[in-house]
Image (cartoon, rainbow, N blue to C red; front, side, top):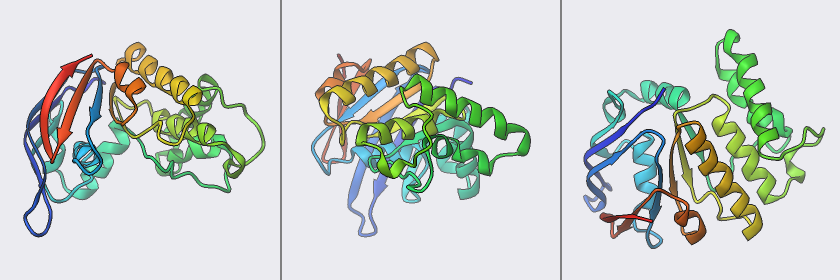
Amino acid sequence: MQLPLTVTDLRVANARGRVLLDAPALTVAPGEAIGIRGPSGAGKSTLLFALAGLLDNATGAVRWGDTDILSLRPEARTGFRADHMGLIFQDFLLFEELGAAANAGVGALFRRKTTRAPLRARARDMLTRLGISDEPRNVASFSGGERQRVAVARALAHDPSVLLADEPTASLDRAAADRLVGDLTDLARTRAKTLIAVSHDAALLDRMDRVITIADGRMQETAHV
């Protein structure tokens, strides 16, 4: 399923009324790879979390296809993310005591029985594609690059239409970061998945179709790279 994104008058403010993000308009076509750049504290992650429907203080409209995720009740937002989105966080959020396959396929625990086996199979396939071998060891012994690849496999195991990544190369060395960027952009383009990545990494941003710049909570420009 392909989901175009249309953002209208998106605004996020804190409890004191200070505007953290002001995004009047944004459109992203299905299968596009979009980078989000800007200084620390500018509102990049806030934008990403708002697009995922993770912020209760976001107003305006964030429409994925025909669904405005901001208008949904919390449980419906969770269901929408589970069905359509893969999220990659900076700190991986893996279960240290589990192996790569168990971590990548953990989403099967929350699915109907009929969908569990296919999800776990996709998780194993993604691990193989990303170069993670099927070894009987838990992720506590993995390097940062291996952990990030397990997190990517988990995000893609349910075959989401949208992939949202927050600083996906921040903890990786240059070689591992370049491999991951290649993996993500290849998956986006060959499988028509929308990729939106917050990053300070110039090499990652250079591989995107477009780059959005955010400063002081405002979307200043959209540049083709």
